[in-house]
Image 1 (cartoon, rainbow, N blue to C red):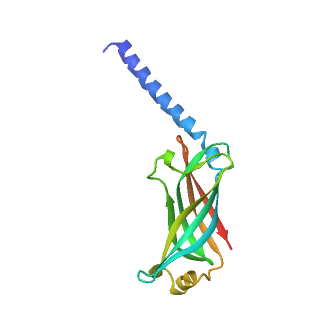
Image 2: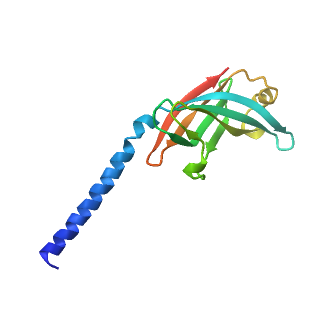
Image 3: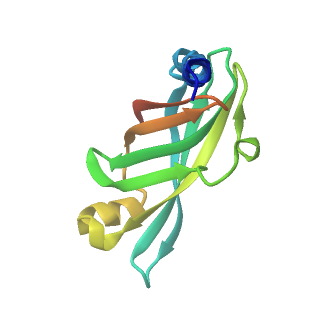
Length: 165
């Protein structure tokens, strides 16, 4: 192979690597605005009690706000739910298997409630906590976890902690 042919290959490889670096840099420009996303626990409501399975289902609603100028979607909210300071269990809101155009869109200034079903099993918690939950005697709920936001170019994860009384 001639020297000029080798040099062309090296220049082409360097060009491709430079282009890939540029794409990564361009994608990272969204991260600052994506990290501005705000999430708060809006409500926890008892929906259904199954005495056969010893399970209670709760509707957990998170209010996600977009104070930035960048439009994004939420692909995942992983959280642990606490009732009166005691761990009830883990839950997850996920749209990871849905393409970006099919997800809820958070335009600049938007506030969108995202609802999830949380299943509380009697076998996984203290029976006193379970009974208080199904009798609506829990006075405060708290959720902590992580919020994953996405644009077509970038993905960020942000830790959160929020509660309601």
